Length: 519
Image (cartoon, rainbow, N blue to C red; front, side, top):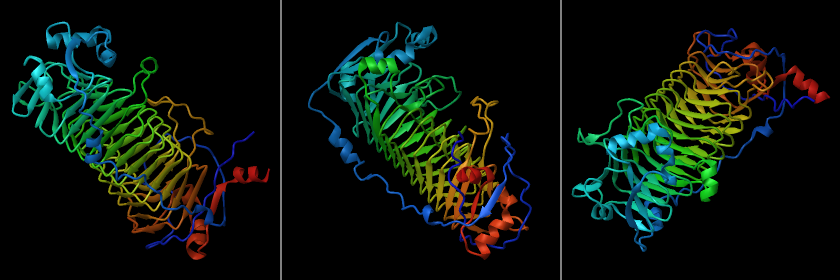
């Protein structure tokens, strides 16, 4: 039994500047390993009413404030501070597993490694300094604290690093890092990975060099508000920078830990291995922050996280990969009103079966690869984004179906304004074997503008379906005028005749699709 070929293609009301018919294939398009599948397409007219969508509604974000975080702090029950061996501690198992990782802490502490534990209630840096010797934790100058051991906030405890703290420093030489297994509040202050030898932040030097990090485990709550966080993380599991991550399935079940969560508001994250990372987290809010000059990613929610709000952030200067990326089943989330620019690869990426996400009203520009990239992730909506002057494609959709592009501006990008294509990934690091039936692309484009892109406003190869309606094509960069590429280029004269001259909706679909409908 054949699968349904999905929706059809509608195109209508396109305004063209300096329109001339041109060859369907243009020079400068990106070469890819395409899954070639010969299809014949037919052109006809169809009603366009089915393409109407109401403007997306966003969740109420008014409650995510410093005042709301302050109200969550319970200072009534005072906690206690103890020092224990790192061995056989659930919150530290990921960091001492195997001889090599344990050896790291033995070398740095010059003894069987220990950690500071906060238990049973509320604690501040002042409390830590009073309870511990300077060799483990000290106030080096008024309001400046230095941790020289790993620090764990217990499941029944909370730590507030507040405005009375000028800087909370984690010693790189001594192997300090911060683990939250309860509630951690960082408000109106600084958190810094500290290189004692240089009396300066532990700025990035190489991927495998230990740098202090912050990880917030299953069942925990992390709140960072109005603060600056600097130079955390390196290339080691769960040690990336600022992370909110569930325990392994066995640990989470044994410890009865729910998904971790947190709010990161109005703060600055600088020079981290990953600016932000999460794994199986829920309802995390990342709002109003600046992520600059991070190494691999700016914001990177990962496996099976859901209900995330990524809003009003500015992300730039990421050195190795993308500004904002959600990957591996990150679903039902909002990526809205962000600025992502001057990142080494793409500005925003939706990746690896991440579905039902809204990417809306973002400004994505001057990235060194694509503007917005959708890889192997179906059923996502892009609305009202400005995608400008990126070095490769403006919006790129690969092996994904039901991608809806509404009211977007894609202009002055180096290659294609909107690219849709299929690709065989079996020979890549993903090792995904996609047969021609599984590798498919379909999209809907409604409203917005495609203007002045380097090779073509729109290119789609072997689509399952594409729908176009009320798109403006302006300012062609080539003297030959505006030209489609891919399947649309092959049918360009018929499409433009209906769109421009007759002002009608256009339906394009494969011949086999129509045969199925008749059956």
